[in-house]
Image 1: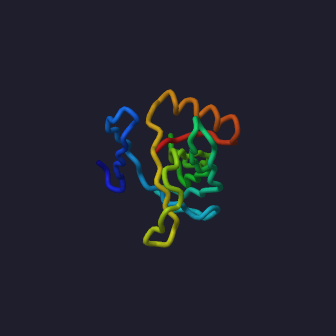
Image 2 (image 1 turned 180 degrees about the horizontal axis):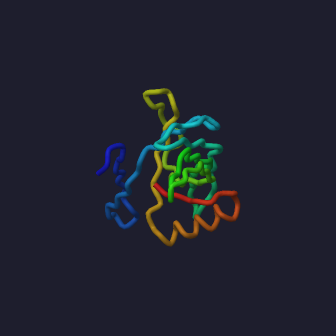
Image 3 (image 1 turned 90 degrees about the vertical axis):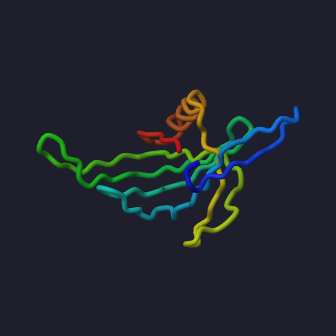
Length: 133
């Protein structure tokens, strides 16, 4: 199991044990550039929407690739993105070592569900990419 992930166990009405994988999402400051390889990205907003009786968390923002080279030419590129963190399990239940709020989420792993969520986001946000954790 990757670091930062926890496994939650629950007992269904049938008495069978089930498990879900949850991960921690550290909320980044909105509107602040985050340096990355070959550029930076800027989270612009966090969005929580109801979805199938649960709450879904995604972040929208933009990415600036400061140097994209192809065929001997280098040009900067940018695009708007949405990063789906997952279903909210525990909203901002603790602070990170750097004092940022941390939320426990369950990533969306089912491809058909991801496609449905992509349709919702593309229909309501001006983004060119939707990524899932």
